[in-house]
Length: 53
Image (cartoon, rainbow, N blue to C red):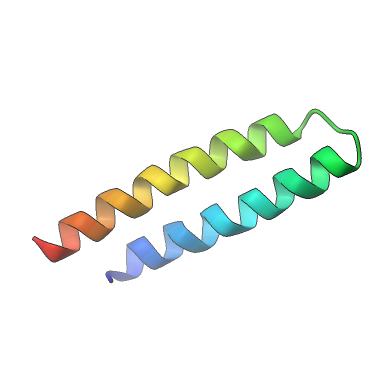
């Protein structure tokens, strides 16, 4: 797996954790973290596919 894909995966995992913590605390800021998780997930797939090709 390319290095950029691993970085994007790490950002995705951390943003999901931040979203869970934010929603547990009752903050609506978790929506931003969910959007960031979606974006980084797409980046992970893109870089992983590009690395295989």
